[in-house]
Length: 128
Image (tube, rainbow, N blue to C red):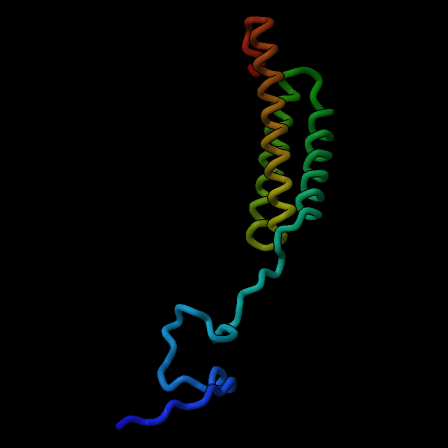
């Protein structure tokens, strides 16, 4: 006839399965190590990069005597800052590089707005 029904055994759920799991449902820790970033992006790093870049642009902007020299000094300072940000992305802290890039983009936007307002009010292109 057939075998009699077996009583319930709660330990049966913890016995190894006779077949290999498909991997659809994880059965334990991963079999290979998880990559951890050496310099993760943090709010403190972004803030530090933003502060240093703002000071950098301010110091270069103060070298300008008029709108044209202010705009050129801001452009040069931003290019130098972005070069440093590219180095930081590759070899340093990506959070600081993010803060630098954001503030430089904002500084360039302010310089462009100043140039546009001067051009609109005077009718003469101020950069040459």
